[in-house]
Amino acid sequence: MSRVALVLLLVAVVATATTACGRKGAPEAPPGSDFPKTYPAW
Image (tube, rainbow, N blue to C red; front, side, top):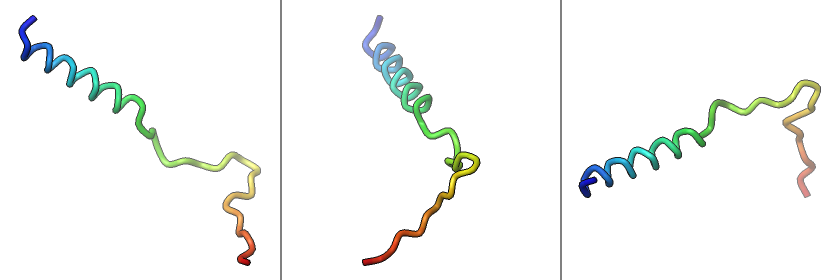
């Protein structure tokens, strides 16, 4: 493989890996939880 093709392949693999591990959506509290809580201020 040429050096350019190898660099492009490496960039594609790194870009795919970082997008696959990213946040999928806004987090939601599980049903029945009392989130968010208000904590007492000292």
